[in-house]
Amino acid sequence: MSAWLIGVAIFALLFVLPEVGLAALWNTLIPVAPALIVFAPGVWRNVCPLGTTAVAARHAGLSARRSLSPLSRVWLNFAGVVALFVIVLWRRFELNTNAQSTAAVLAALGALSIAMGAVFEWKSGWCSGLCPVHGVEKLYGSKPLIAVDNAHCDACERCTNPCPDSTDAIHPMLGTSCFPQIASEWLLVGAFPGFVWGWFHVPDHVGGWEWSSALSDSTPVLLGASATLAAFIGIRRLVPKRHEGRLVRVFAAATVSCYYWYRIPALFGCGPFPTDGTLIDLSAVLPDGWIGLSRAVTTTIFVGWIVFYPASKRHWLHRPPYASGTISGSSDWESGFTESGDPSANRFSQASPLVQLDVAATDRATEWPSANGHGERTRTFHSEPRGAPSRASRGNGRSLHSVPKDSADR
Image 1 (cartoon, rainbow, N blue to C red):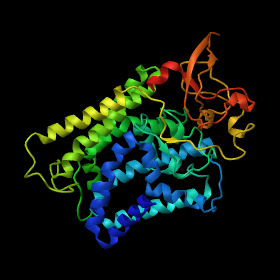
Image 2: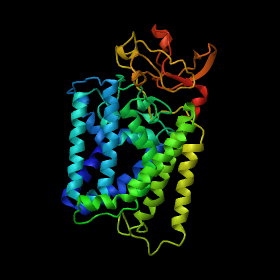
Image 3: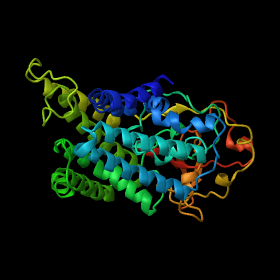
Image 4: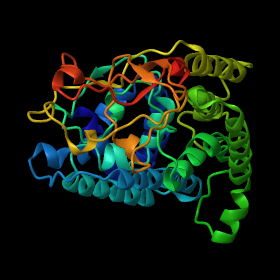
């Protein structure tokens, strides 16, 4: 609640003290968010003001509690990724310097989060659906340093499966081969590193802008995004599917390292455009070489942690006990799952190509028959609540969403 009140206070400052509100949002809260998502995505999910707003209707018993179809959820995720790119680029042309426009965007996002929470069950509509930051959570948050208790869900209703809060090693490329999923992968994993690099080579616009100039000024962003997207597409063709997670982590580390490469100097008046993104101007007092040192430290930390530090089985958040009626028996999302036959694949098949989006992840190792009939040792996602009975003991006797053991590289 305290984090939500801070969000409300920042929103109010945009009207009362516009410059202070802009600094509090863009130069204080937002610069902290990427690092928090890397090391403690569960903390971020707990304190995000929009996330708290989204589940308010459910806490109050006012939500319609509708379930999202797998296809609808994928389209919502894709819409969130597109919104992320639009909002971040829009910052350069208006939001960074215009408190009223920033407040309008925050109000629109708040209204959307309320609407999604009022219609759909728990976090499925906003936090794990339409939220523009959710894709970044999956991109950066594959190796959380800590897992914390879930501040919003006191009982698991299986609103989203697999649940991003309680599934280890989740990342943006865990999905199906449909257009919105592939487009999200290309944008978020492939284009985002170059997009971030280009963003820091575009100055803030003060006093308005025109579409014609906006396109030309966006050239660094477009070129950077295109370059890293092309690299991603080319490298992905060479990387086995079981190592997709490692590929994602390399691009994630490049993105967050690039962000802090430029953002930390800019916070202290030493960015490419000295007046842009400055929290406090210390350029006259900071020693020579501090920029290189800060870049070396942040890049080493993020690349070392995201790419090279051994993968853990830690989740973003501890899953709470299942709600009454959700453990026993078989539900719609549980029925009819089969393994694709290719033990090296991370994607699973049923009649619908979207089936794996609704697979409930387990935390047991099982033996799946491989395509040639030999057993393949597999490793599963960790998404069971503490103390929950195994699926075999629930009567269905099967383990879902298994992936090869060497996909620990994911």
